[in-house]
Length: 107
Image (cartoon, rainbow, N blue to C red):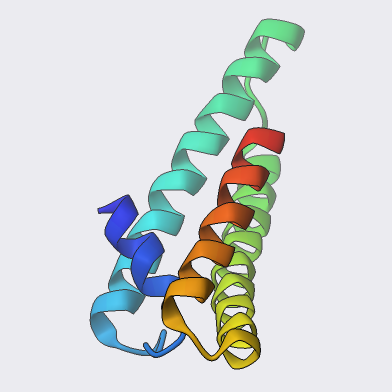
């Protein structure tokens, strides 16, 4: 599912407003937000001996959801901009894949 979503959201000829793509983005954001929040709570428990408060968890989840949504939108517009520059879907795909791999390894 993740690969398919990546390919769809970096395809400059596809609209992000398609219900199928919006559903995939929503599921991805929800799953990752839950995983990251659990991870942060585990770190808090290890370091401080207690979990984060409900207020902090709520703020973290809202911030993560907003950041991830903006990330999907920005990545799609980056693909559109690259496509407008290259006028070639294969070069755009190569450009997007190179940037994605670099950022994953930098993270």
